[in-house]
Length: 133
Image (cartoon, rainbow, N blue to C red; front, side):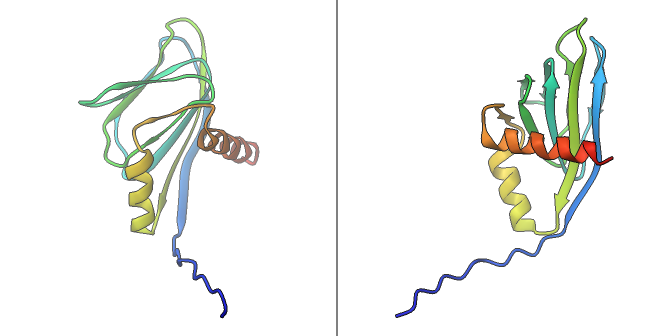
């Protein structure tokens, strides 16, 4: 008897845009916003406070990441009034609704700690992306 295992087909165009690395001064804040796609943010230096409207404030330190779900009202600010902070950001989406839903359901609007594989891999991808600009 042959052992045959079928892998699922994933048809998904990946759309990425708005990627940047930004060093900001102490006291920096960014106005309340939401996006139609997923936003990936990783802090590389300092601490960022990301406030999810009507929910909580998430403190991101060096290497920490967050995936912000589409339609989520949020603000970002440097947690320190005097020291600089650096973060990297990328907006992305998938055509595959099931994959998109799983990512949002499992990972969105939560701290992804620096010691996790997901934060580490995401940071490495953003570093490579920023070097190729």
